[in-house]
Length: 308
Length: 308
Image (tube, rainbow over all chains, first blue to last red; front, side, top):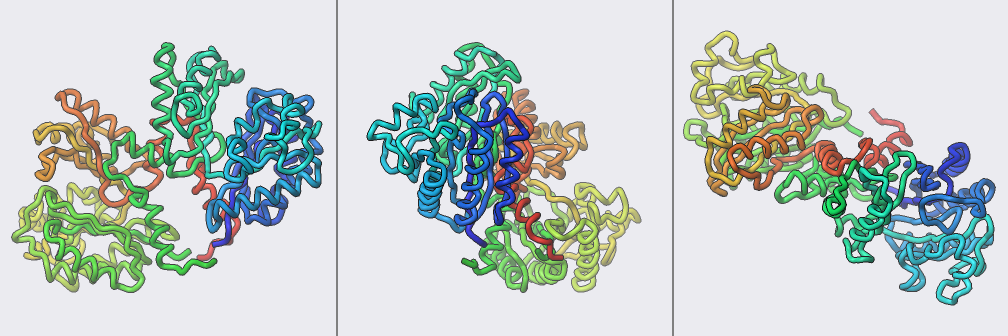
């Protein structure tokens, strides 16, 4: 099995499908790219792209992505409900198979250096690739958003890892990093009161007293005239998805509000869902190898010598 | 990818681990057998073995299984909480990959003919392999159990498909068939009142007014001094596992009894659990290809031409 790294760039365009498609098509044409998913949100005015490849393939793919985005997007006119600081807002690399976190950190540095050199865009490395502890958390890196970056980047503790200490007018600033797979998970409430969603976001997220590996905020969605608690579950193994969902129900009860439904943005690792099924069905002694497909894979892996 | 069929024999021995192990070891030694799982229940006095192979491999493996069982088991002294009519009580074949249901029906016939010829054991084909509609349902085939088979097999509508119209003294009668993957699922209650578990079994199973693709009954487990609703979910796509679990909770409430937990016997197809996770987490528009691993497999399958 060859090396497989996942790349999930978030770009600041979710309202012009033809533009998103042009960018997606160009990235898909890069040889070796295995395309997984694309998902656009008009309220966020943001798209999430997901693809796989070796380190070499992904470096070429992200360079192509920047070429395309540079051509089509302009942060000077961007508006949307989701925090953002750049046109290619964030580029995480995630180890999937025959790849370590170190491989992904190395790749993040190489790609950051290359796009800064080519486009003059400032790049801040984040999460496992961060060059200092205070630059690990994406929310801290992005604080101030595009509009605040001219000031922020002049502060020594926010000097970019690559590129100039000033935002690129059209491209803004990019965060490039390495991390474990996360789950982008939104829960809708039967109200359009944004204050309630914000308060629940505060209650469930780790930074303000909630669950350790949850990042969350309240967002109003015009499409449904409902608010949502919009979250990233950054460690679904330690803070499982059912715990987050049930806690939101509990917090919503305080306002006489109910959960309408939830959505997964992009892809979700199967273990995140299986663990929740085991919780709700109260399956005693649940282990992943009770699942037929997992067991078959294990048996197949034992039977065949691993090609490196 | 080569042909893969699953075989899940249920044998009438769950109290002597050394005997079960001797049988398992012999089957494992058959060339080409991919072993998945074994699970013994002392209360049921029954073990469930799960392995994979091509049709040819599985035929050799099941013949070996009968040789071993013939040597070690004797139905004349068998007691246990689970209905049974033979030492190799039931042998289902299940299509997994590059195999059709027709392949499994053909295999069931071949194996049935071979074991009847070698051991003189009567074989009734069941489910998709059944030779008549009234012989499809395993519960109907097994009705009367080992003790009632001498009478039953003399009735024309229960003449075995292979072998003599009289039970083998030690081996009894075997049901051999082909079917979709099922989920063996038990739910424990916080009572030792067997009547309650039996009543709930009647309420949830399709044959008596419950859920269409559920077979179920109440069983007392000495080990826990609790009763369980012991079920086979024979079509987890049309009758999903969460619906069964929630209905049992509802029926239990009538008696002031609660569900303590549940257990999966053997292996469970991942889709059965994923669908339940999507239900409980209220994930809108859930589709299996939202799951990272499924999506990767799809992409890999598209990229590589399928070897037959």
